[in-house]
Length: 524
Image (cartoon, rainbow, N blue to C red; front, top):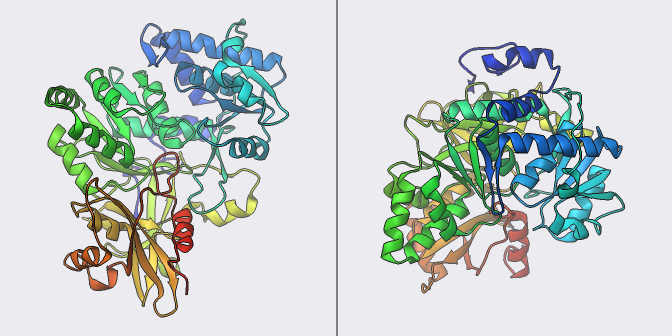
């Protein structure tokens, strides 16, 4: 089954307002929109961070100054790494690089130094733009020059040419859950199209206030959250770190909250552990939000239902990836089906392709193939990976899914790590995890497949328990047998104190499999 946008356009999937720009691919809509906002929304607050409040006019002027200084340093059109605190200075550095025609390579101060150095080297960055507190550390990451944002923005702004729309503006490295990270080349038009499509689908308004504490070296925090808010002319309240109690208080002045399942669960844990007076205030704050979204991993229905009880609406789930932006989304106004990623986003095209390259019928599983204006052009300096990722112009996501309820997408998992083949059956690790999370003693769970001589592969559940609970392997298996088919019940259940996660909270299953092997589980 293939689902397409309702109105075909000149560029596959592009919305009408993007057609003329996308067809010509001349100057960058991303840059033009940003600079126009600095004039048309000049007095409006663009960013509120932990240090200052910055208007669109000030943000635009600072970015132009950064770009001019980078040009004078011979860095126009070059790749430049970005190691900045989250907030206004990060945006000044990012748009300074982009306005100078360069390609930004965002780094995270949370990554260990060897990993940061690897990103700088493999991206071939000519320089690093850093905020003051990270500038000394940045000098340890390679032989390239380091420039402080605070100094770059003190110069004079020059007139600069607008970059080409199809030029790469960003390199983001995949999360590495299934192997070494690959650098996704994301163009100005990819980012601009993503922001337009999501803003339209989620009914974004200039008077919205986004509460933001997601990392900015991932597309979720950078593109789906920050760029959608900024390019809509609305205000973004950026927090440097995720602090649950702080975010509950911040909701009083916000209208949209975006997060990952781990964040949503930790917010609820803080709520449950707070004094009754704080809970009453926080519940009033949450009721002010018009939209709560969840992405980057499957949202447990138990967590979604708690949010629905608190706010009156279930968090909006969607399907997105570094390489594609957002492909499907539950509606803002309309039925949201828990555990699904909603219908195809207007402007995108999605297929679920089964064995033999045929489109899967509703209820059948297959790989998600997708195309549209926000889909990236390929992996940096990796032609073989790019060829493998595309088929006849469609990006092959590596995710297994099915259509449910007519046209809602349900993710069954990463084909490589979440689809297990055991005794002739195909098992969805995500389905098993969702069932086990319903146990009141289980705080979180991750299911992986391990080799087995008899079954080929068996499901093993790594479990985190709620504080004060104990649970035996036999108890978990007996409980699961009452809720899922016996062939889906994990053969082993191992209790851990923590699970290996990437910066957006997703469990890194290859690393978990190594933990299990170290514990003697899964050896033939």
